[in-house]
Amino acid sequence: MKAWLFLAIKDMSKRRRETLMVILAITIGVVGPIFTTALNNGMQNAFVGNAVDVFLGHMQIQPNTGDDVIARSESVVSKASGIKGIVGVAPRVTGGVEIESKTEKIGIAIFGVKPSLEEKASTLSKTVERGEFLDDKDKYELLIGTSLAEILKVDVGDTVLILYQDREPIEFRIKGIISTGTWELDRYGIIATYDTVKQLVEKDDATSILIRLENPDNSLMYKTILQKETTLPNVKTWQELSAGMAGMIETFGAISLLTSAIPVFVAAIAISLIIYTTVKNKIREIGVLKAMGAKGSMILKIYLAEALFIGVIGTMLGTVGSMFLVEGMRQNPLVMEPEYGMKLVIIPWISARSIIAADLAILMTCIIGGMYPASVAAKTNIIKAIWGG
Image (cartoon, rainbow, N blue to C red; front, top):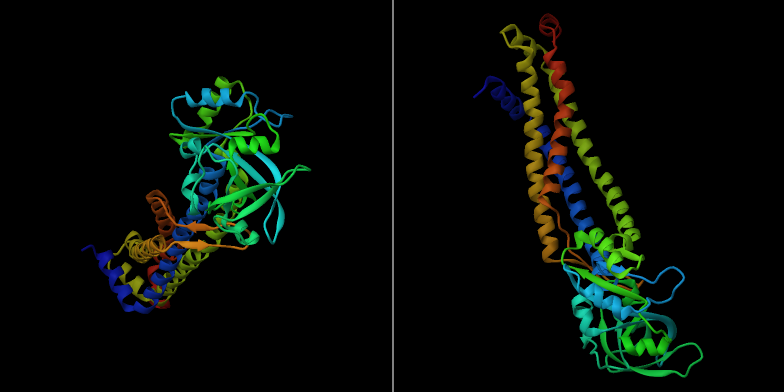
């Protein structure tokens, strides 16, 4: 064993309590950033992922500026369906109506969908909690969100009245209760078949066309392809459609990450103080070591080795602890059912690259924290150390 390594281990063993306290601080400092990143990833999946899969689509074709509908939308659907890499295309039509139950009457958005196409273009058909999904042949059947169902005090099999402008109310039967994790469908929207809604809100074509890609990361490439093939300029990617929501979550994540980074800097300061105090208390011993032939580089290695050892142990314990915490939460996801109308299941996850980046950043912080006191020890004057210690 190298002499400097032996002396570093011996020095730490003499002050076990201080060493363990700093290791604990680093462990907590590691758990914070890793778990916060995993939780933020889970929240982004819950908010943005649900919205993209169910409501927005990987791509969305919208009406040209000044138009209410997409002209010749059936032809657009046909063209888009023939493009390689696109696995699902579904037109939707939207309008504003009032819904009236036995106890409540509120304004709401109604979405018309083609059930057989939605099964390929979105995950809407998988969100049914009670009852059944719509069929293409259904006429006056509805899907309604869990939160809206509670407000209206209705359930599967109940009937409601749908009112559009000054026309006679039409009776619809609730076929299914859905939970999508989006405000738009769980609280502020209802769903019926495409032709039924077209007739109800008096629109001739689709108001949007959802597109599902084989690889969502290629959305920018397919935006250009779709604009060329359909000659429609107003094509949006899922990144554009969810930008506001994703930005909000990223801001929250940045704040949380900054907050969780505080223990790391505290630990670095603690390492610096402990090693600096050790240097001051052992100034005579350092002088003796130098008098015996120890070079400044050896003294530097002793105290840097201590900082690195404390950092490595703390980082390893923190990483293992955070992984147990993340896995535990994956097995028991956080379910949020706030009053504002959506149910979210948050399952944290983190990539190996993010873990390695966090660990390296913390190790570097620990090494930097030990640099100053180690350099002070290395530059100690032999005579002053022996006579001044």
